Image 1 (cartoon, rainbow, N blue to C red):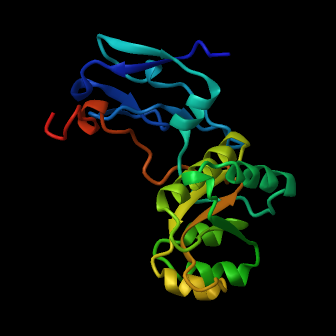
Image 2 (image 1 turned 180 degrees about the vertical axis):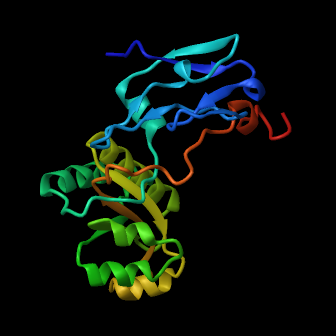
Image 3 (image 1 turned 135 degrees about the horizontal axis):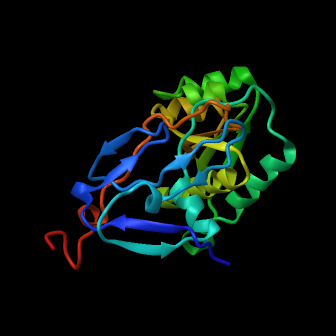
Length: 228
């Protein structure tokens, strides 16, 4: 079933005006859903571009829940100080398990870290890892030798979308010193862990760090070759 809420894409992005969650109008060439943050909880409520982008003409798309979740996903860095319920964690891990992979090799693993000292050791393996310290759970994505990073990226997006749809929040983190991370986590030789995800329930006042839009589709797409 689809929703009647419209998504209006500005006909002239350079003249589009969008309203941020604070209600401030900003002139921008970027297209952005306007996300209304409730006082409590994290379930995003998209008012969508049709209500915050002013343009004489536009393309109207019909939204469904999956599409709204994709467009509404944002990285969150502030979490509630409470444990993650086992059933919520299991649901996220099940979404990760069903990620597709090249030749269905599934040559990956997820290390679930709850111990605060261990989370600190993992966080020390990267830059800008504060969200790991703020969240109750760190999920470290591990690759077998020869695994494709594209598959790891697919898994991370599954994790983040599933968490968002179930009322949780996530923030993807790069572990820049992946050799150190491998030692901290006791990985077998040749295995890598370059990415982690902070997972928890969002703090009621949480906001994306850089709340904004996206480049217009004309700026990021090319047809047949890059110069077209």
